[in-house]
Length: 312
Image 1 (cartoon, rainbow, N blue to C red):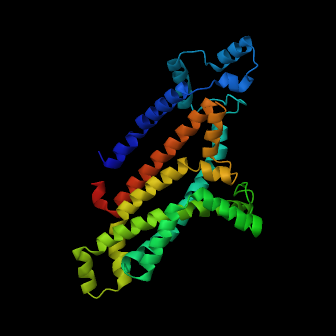
Image 2 (image 1 turned 30 degrees about the vertical axis):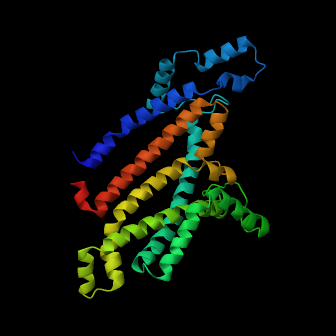
Image 3 (image 1 turned 90 degrees about the vertical axis):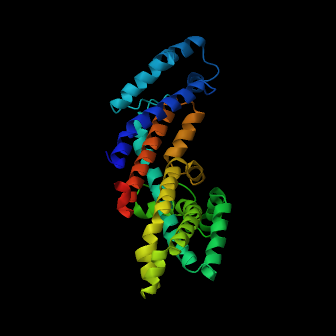
């Protein structure tokens, strides 16, 4: 059995374990969904009736079994607050988070790879010192602070971009790009700093290998050796870091979404936690876990493409 097939078969038990953990943790959190819905002044009779209606008076294992049975049939339940189907909310919020995460990652890659290559090829040159300085700045400055500075400069002072909000790409692509420009840049610049250091260190290690010296001794041009020989062999740790980065972005953009008023999945989960809307939280976390698993599968496929020996 190939390693990739083993990984695919592990998807189901992984998601099952995630669902059990999040269901158990939500059960022990302080607060009561019934109180959050009815308020502190609700009568005991009304509270008992609503608890029975929501199924919260059943044992925890029965609640989990009922929810899991619905998930297996494509039903993630309904929100405690407004009875909206969770799957409908996810279908609205998930594309927004994916767009923001992939846009931020694209910005990070477009900056990190050229800067990392230049820093590795000329380790004692000005490009290395400049890229190192930029990387340290990117890793040190919080992206939420950078986002607020972008809002003050480009939205308030210059008026070039909207300060907050979101427009779907299918409705208005210009409005979508304008709304996503600042959050993508604010997050992508931080990610580029991390990736640039990874590209530089990995490429420096490969450039010291004997076969690279042999390629240079044959008279090949510098770019031919770096791009054609060294870079591909230096990509394995970079792909690993990229996979972890995308996974982190898919589940950790709540601050960016809150600053720029983007209706993404991270903000949805946090709002649902404050409202004690546990069904919404369970659906959101399960969707995030599924995306992380998919990203890991894509990383495994890229491993075999970069180095076919890994797939054997």
